[in-house]
Image (cartoon, rainbow, N blue to C red; front, side, top):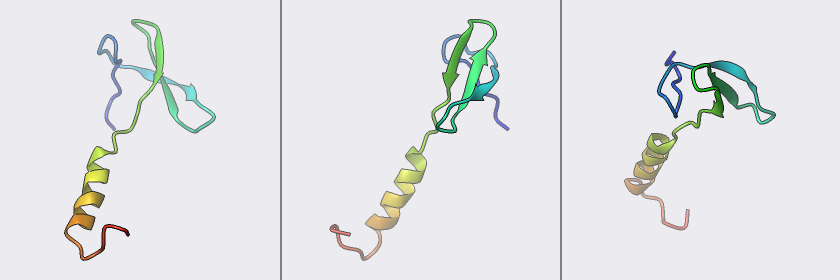
Length: 61
């Protein structure tokens, strides 16, 4: 599993609970910041677009 790092100081973080939406919260012991790590879906969206682009579907679909 990839270690989550703090967006402020770049050090390793620990799990710090879960939001109602189901997102994992993280906490940095060094700078005392709690945050949620956003999932990057750009590559998935690009794959879907390229699949559509090279298919025979119409733009309306």
